[in-house]
Length: 398
Ligand code: NDP
Image (cartoon, rainbow, N blue to C red; front, side):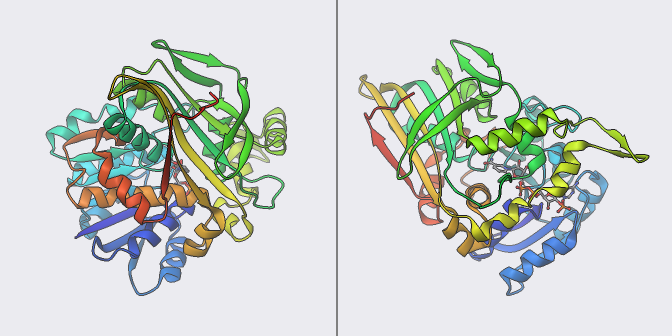
């Protein structure tokens, strides 16, 4: 059906190409390109069958990207490198007339700040070029946004309260490790908390608001309100929302390590001189922490991510609704050789590319995933390893 170029050979990239390779009717030709070609070759070798071609590319170099895209001629580029590369890859897609998909919004390297403004600014250029850009198609953002769209389409006349709840109850056996790129992860979880209430953003100290929430099949876990990027587009696309928050579970051990890392200056993102060489402390830290893509082997337990929603039903009655997916780290590892967080991000990215190639999510412009029809995507989640469950009129705890 179509050709796809995947950029980024980390944990998420491994899952994306593994899943795509298992769907030859949809993804006829797959190329995996990244900064370090040997990582692409290792992933392609594990998949086998000459299903995946590989290439070296510096995704911060637009002419290099343009050359690669022109030679491979993909229908869509799936960006699972780092958020720093988003704008360069969007530029290269515009120049070559190819569709774009990513899982994380742009973040300037020199400032720990993420928002959609930079990518939404491409709207006119993509629309005028007749090109589709699909933003935030991982799990969160991604599936959580599509869960919300599904709830709005089928179960609610108005959504009033949205609480996205993200629990990782897995244990990788290491004293400290992050589940995706450590630099991006630490920048995200150490920033101030932020949520939407009554038409404005409320800012809190980091991890200031917390309480135990009960996750299906897991039990109660201390959960913390943090800022997460899908809140920005969801409150824009669903203006009836009065309050939108994002909760994430953290263990005490993780928070203690994080506090120490910050207190000793290792979370700094500004360059320092060490022995005459310029280094960025958080990038040095990434180099000594476990590689998230390698955590899978001993990872046990589950992730549970979903949306808890309150509002007015189609029939005009007050309603609560909980929709979620539980994913096993062990099963993710058995299938792809990576852990559950890479799996829950990579599978939706592959499904999003499939939606585009099937013509179901193809419309000129720059879109967040909740702006597409959720139904065919939700059906593929059930088929491709991330089944979801729903519960009506239960106590949401939030
Ligand atoms: P990793 O750090 O494991 O992998 C990133 C990959 O991108 C590496 O292979 C790296 O190359 C490559 N890369 C970095 N810079 C460049 C560049 N300039 N040119 C080419 N390749 C480059 O990260 P993850 O796989 O854990 O995460 C990938 C993305 O997924 C991130 O953007 C992350 O924010 C996002 N994510 C989204 C989630 C969601 O639910 N929406 C959840 C988790 C992650 P090298 O190997 O040489 O370093």
